[in-house]
Image 1 (cartoon, rainbow over the protein chains, first blue to last red):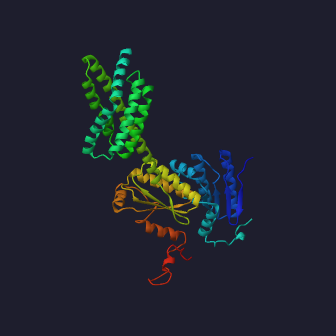
Image 2: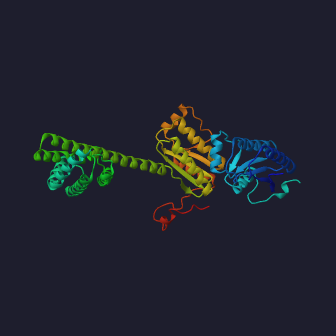
Image 3: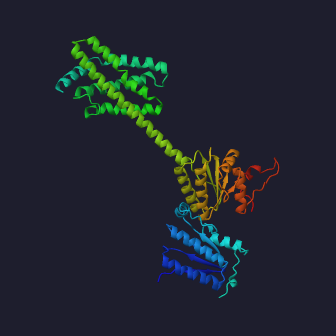
Length: 131
Length: 305
């Protein structure tokens, strides 16, 4: 079965969405992600959507939902790499994703998470996650 | 139709035999009016144009079977008028001046017809033919003139659309979008797309939208601005709105528009300062007074980290 991989990078989790999210996949993904966050105690989640060419309202809502779930589990969500066309579509759909932080690329997103978590740049704190 | 063709032979003959005379009168006719209007076309140029036209006119008359200027026999004359109309439209002549170019041929032509005389019936017929042809040609020139002007307008509109939405890089990672003129949906769309694309291409994290050149802001304009800012935010870039004039600030409040999610600054300089601060930079004066040896080199220098 199709799955979206969730990668661990230090105290953060990195998710790259490259396929269209359909109902089943989203449910599995939400299960996986919340499970991972609570298991590892991750402080932040980076969702990279630079490979997505188009979104619909369902997709927009799912991104917002995922961000909301992560926040409840005390992990900040940063959506990175949104394409112009996708951004325009979401705005036109009225889905401005309030409460979701954004960055241009993974690198900048990582910086943002580090800064907001008071971690110094370039210093890996691998021991932060429990296994 | 055969009778008509025969009489046209008469008209063609008259024009052919008295070409020089018609030309002189025609040019005289035009220069008399030209002098009054002061249009910018010298006489030798006008004479050359008239001569060429008259020649084409005579040749077409010889071969033509009907007075229908749209038909194939008149192609040479049409081509000439087309060229002439476009050239004059570009020079700024008015449409009536352009029509007058053709219409003014009537007086010398009719005068000549009267001189030659003949029976009343054939004189009336020939005059009618000449009138019909010349009127149609005048209409044709006006049409071409209008088309040429419309093309110019369309091109200028397109250029304005391109010109009015340049995205400039102020510094590494800082973009500026100086907006000029009224914001409508089409322009905002172009603007939004080019801004977002440039953000993506340059990896800039801050964009300054300067509305100094925007005369009025209404609810629709504000909505467009908000959409642009939101879309940029979704991509991970921050927008600063600058150049808000006092009047516009008042309008925004009176309209009850909420620009809460936006950083707003009065001037582009203020916005730039904020942008530098956000990207961890600052501007430092490197020379304190005149007379130091390398004041000039300080201009354009990267501020020290």
